[in-house]
Length: 261
Ligand code: HXC
Image 1 (cartoon, rainbow, N blue to C red):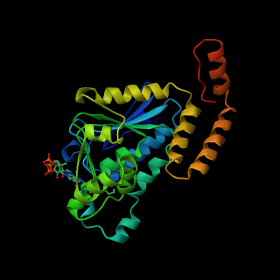
Image 2: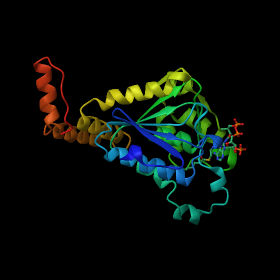
Image 3: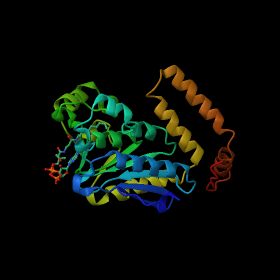
């Protein structure tokens, strides 16, 4: 399955029930060219369909999660060549992954790299992580969600500085402003992300999936329709064997055994 597929720009492996995708272009700080994003998307979609994986992790290396879209590939682009290119669509495809994705970020998460981390569901950062949208320095603005997701995460005032003045956030600032879940020493960031993902992967799979969907719906809709959506998903879970199992296990004071059904 996915853990055996050979890629040019990424490494993948299954660690217990955690599917791990590692960006592997260290010489260019994991700059995201279209081939890399194609592989990342394919690998995550494969893990999403693999019943052996319960939660996914995407990471880079200590120096860089990803320093942005590959500027060498964008330099000569035109509006029409961008339209014809599936590149930015890859970030949208990540939104359709049903299983949770944890970004394990160390070093630079810039431009499209920051947008990739923000397209995930949670971020575990090393103390050395730096988040930014420095597109303004090369004459453009973020194009894969940076203006929207950064603003939702940290608020308008700080997002403006980040987007139109190229301000970087340290890991501690990112934590304080709600962009990341936790900050750990650099030697622990991947381990901690995999540990968090393994915890989630051990939970009732359908409930995890619908919980992710429900939280994400909060960013798309009014409170009223978000609450209605949540209630439908909540009712739907009463059709699962895992709901019966979870409640029976609680009542009988035993650990539940999840089936994902
Ligand atoms: C292509 C990149 C790159 C990038 C780094 N490199 N970032 N190549 N695209 N985004 C390459 C460098 O050219 C260099 O190659 C090598 O990686 C190491 O980088 P250095 O600059 O030598 O390292 P350092 O001095 O430590 O500086 C690190 C850095 C800097 C601050 C992260 O590399 C930088 O500013 N990078 C660009 C960041 C950026 O603007 N990102 C946004 C891109 S636009 P050589 O061959 O010289 O060793 C974007 C738009 C997204 O993401 C739109 C939607 C998809």
